[in-house]
Length: 258
Image (tube, rainbow, N blue to C red):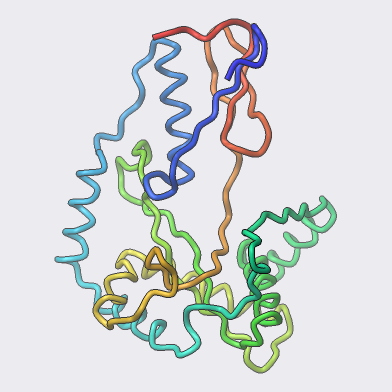
């Protein structure tokens, strides 16, 4: 979008069904390389190769432990849809943004270090406390994305290389927050360790009904969106991220055509 003779905005919009967050960084980097007359780096795989490899992994690999793990998680009677308040009739959803100041962030990181956990585990525990309060449940199941780029050659592939897995958080006994973090950490790690077998495979084997229209097994997702996409280098232009969305501002001349 041209906002001035020497100022342009490039918006990148990719549906999450076809591309994960890492794909945006790869796409912008490839675009910059093309603009600068370079050949984009290639990992040697495309999504057809990846889909065939994933299908073979599910069919041929030994997933006995993962099957037992997901069967146990999906057999929990409190798994799935959380009874959360709905918007008033006629009102759609919305976005509520909370910014954590530097002092609170430092305290969060210190607590994570003391608990030998990641800041994500601490935040997941905090979200679970909130969900337990509004749902009146003591076992909470939330979804979390797990990157599936652990094979050589996938670091340059644009696609949806993410597994959405359910994480069960146990708040029975009203544990102290540090104790809850100690429960969340292994719960997250266990879900990540068994993510190679898509949980949807076991869902279909057990005949578990999805709780969302898109086939999901949970209606709350906790995720770390990761760092912002760095501003790429375009020869002869100045570029910088514009706001919090996936967009790039370019100035200093008109973009090349073609």
